[in-house]
Length: 305
Image (cartoon, rainbow, N blue to C red; front, side):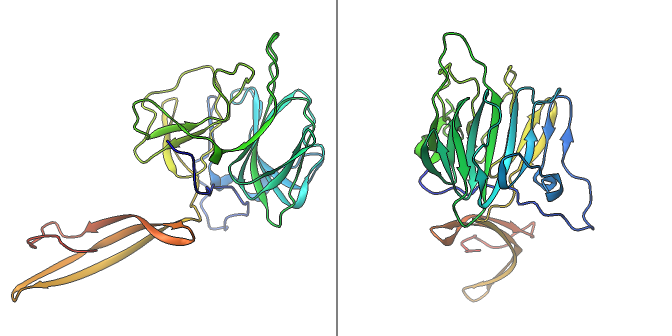
């Protein structure tokens, strides 16, 4: 599978509040085994703030809490232009991962400045000297995963690094013909790392055809698309939200066709198009035609709907 060649457009919450007329019922679930936090609940009123950060607010997706995330925290950070922090991490034992989903920022890591854009990934080991600043004219949103590093005698602490998902070739799972692949930022056999932050990719129809049962905890955020997820015995719908680069267009049609002197055909139905922005232009990515008739008297279907 080749590397990504076009910039990705990932979903990130923007806050706000729904109208007073909106129903309260949503897909939010919190159990002793898992939590589902749909995009509709990430509003202004549930944002948090951190010390030593300016022009910044965040949504806390998970934190060490009995019954759910025992060891890690995951935040969606929103930093305004000019905002950031010269002292972002107050726990010297914590390692971290930053992943950019919208906009760009400057990460200064151990004295070296890195410009990070959408798809940018940074691993920050414990006891690192780092700063974050949004020097752009637009809001930047990124994920920050934090965890207390578990040191093992005889195993070195991994070094810091900064990369972008576009520079990494996703690894196809055997026997899936590319329907399921994983973008891995760290080698699984590297025992210096005690946590992994990956991107799992599914093509339409792709699936994990078994229930995962292992000791590792999971924090899942849907970057794009829509799927169903099996959690314990519950099938849960998950989605990223509508992408600004993809539109769904619905239309109805009535087609009248004549052939020769006597043949007349009618076609009545609806059409659903998915338009995808490519190089600044909208292209038809898929089209679905639904005919209302149960019986077609036409001798052929050589028509363009």
